[in-house]
Image (tube, rainbow, N blue to C red; front, side, top):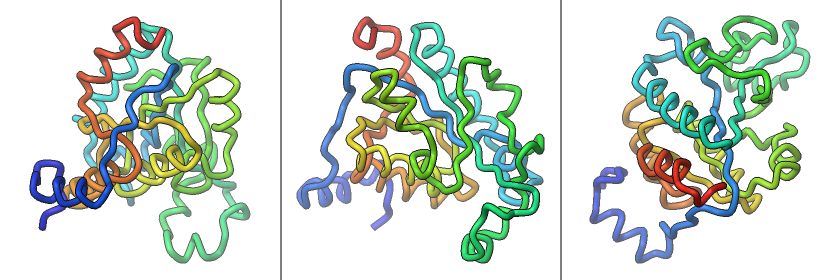
Amino acid sequence: MTHSLDNSELVAFYRAAGFGGRVGWGSKAAVLVIDMAGNWTEPDAMIGSDLGGVTAQIKKVITAARNNDVPVLFTTMAYDPAMSDVSRVSRLKTPHADKMVRGDQSTQVIAELDRRDDEPLIEKPRASAFRNTNLISILVDRGIDTVVIVGCSTSGCIRATAEGAVDLGFHALVPAEAVGDRSPSAHTANLFDIDQRYADVVSVDHVVEHFESSADR
């Protein structure tokens, strides 16, 4: 069977097996913008792809968040130029780590998203935004119990961050149009798995409507 949100038969099969419950919204949300930097968004980059459509959808989410006092946080992956803070195994498995040099423009958030000074940029060493970062302390300090996860890549850092969120007891929502992947099939399959196991996959419109309501303020 094709792993797709549109495959109602497979969705029913997973629901019968006890997957696919809804976590919904908690009491206070934040938006996590995952790895929307040049290394991922420039098609000519080693791990890059055309994420122009995804970027436009992310802008809708973060505009609604900013207009309604919902915190926005960004992540990137960046290492010391000598790669002294990357394990040998990681470099063997993902040689593209050598392109993720701290301070390089390719690891900075793309200009289209207009990151503000009060919006943290978190450097993460691994796929999950929660792994060996200060993200948890920032969220706890602000009383946040819900994360809206946007960015890339669906099959890697989006999935890992959604898994980290549910493991730590956060409500997690993933607006389908605001995440992307260099592989369309990986994107489709992983959105299905995310929806069944880790987070509620919803629409961008659903997120925007929630932010614009009084429910989150």
